[in-house]
Amino acid sequence: MPTLNDFNFENKKALIRVDFNVPLNEEFKVTDATRIHAAKSTIIKILEDGGSAILMSHLGRPKGKEDQFSLRHIVKNVSKILGVHVKFVDDCVGDKVEKEVLKLKPGEVLLLENLRFYKEEESGDKKFAEQLSKLGDIYVNDAFGTAHRAHASTAVIAQFFPKKKCFGNLLAREIESINKVLKDSKKPVIAILGGAKVSSKIGVIENILDKVDHIIIGGGMTFTFVKALGGKIGNSLVEDDKQELALAILEQAKSKNVQIHLPVDAIIADQFSNDANTQVVDTFKIPDGWMGLDAGPKTSEKFAEVIGKSKTILWNGPLGVFEMEKFAKGTIELGNAIAEATKNGAFSLVGGGDSVAAVKQFGFEDKVSYVSTGGGAMLEMLEGKTLPGIEAILN
Image (tube, rainbow, N blue to C red; front, side, top):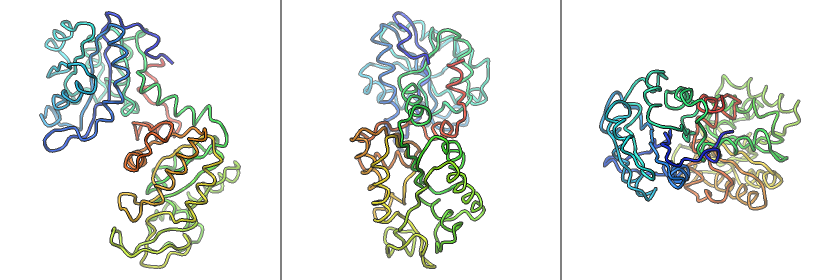
């Protein structure tokens, strides 16, 4: 896999696709700069080699050129994080941009305007990709968050750099981390799949059954399995049309000697609110009018035991409605168990929007091996799909 280390960037202009799609508040201030920090080591390596960096990204879903989605709002943040004054140009293709690029000296950084101001970016237009390609000598893709999209700047552009393209540090780490789970894993391997719906995780479950020894199922999708097995789930979330699928998954797992672990007890509530009345009951015996909103204490113990014996851990999705304090304990206990196993030498990969949010909220970021930056892209890789942005570099 071609990485930054395969190139010397001295006197070269690196055209880098970064993922600076960061959240902004009403005053256009960045509220979470994780994605900018994530690209730093790639950009610094190029500058230290004596090259210059041209950064291209999208921001939000603009309909044409809308100032609220301009990347000029983040220039100060990028400058501060990189420790380098970042120049900005209010377009991403054309004469004006090419002139700015020509002026770039080694050690300098230029940020281009939002790629999605052009509809050609999302449609994967070849001419637009070719215009972008004129801006650099070497193409670096470091945008894992958009690697699953066949856009002009992530997949189409690479063909104009047949021998001069590579992955940035972030994207290379993402690929290595997922491969550590899917291809080079140390056994026993456990996958923890939480979240609301079986339907959104079915592709992942089917693809990883051959690669794991244990699967923990938690979150809202627990109750589709419990109901399919004849349990009473009260008013808990359920996908009635997925019950046969749930039973088929259990059968498949059994035939492949994969142990599936469901929560044995649940914290139930009489309403979906932090002020609800709660009690702990058997997951299969939830009374009418009540709903399961978190994993119970026995479940946490049981899960911690199996996680403690695992050498490779994938965590995708919370075990409860952790945004409400009353229903966060199951997810926190799960995080503690994963942190403990990691400390004892296991490799742990966390990915998917909600589990990443939980990891940050409860301070587990430095206690797991790797936190993925791309929810959709990671899910597609776990489903066994080939990502266009990755394929384009490998071809």
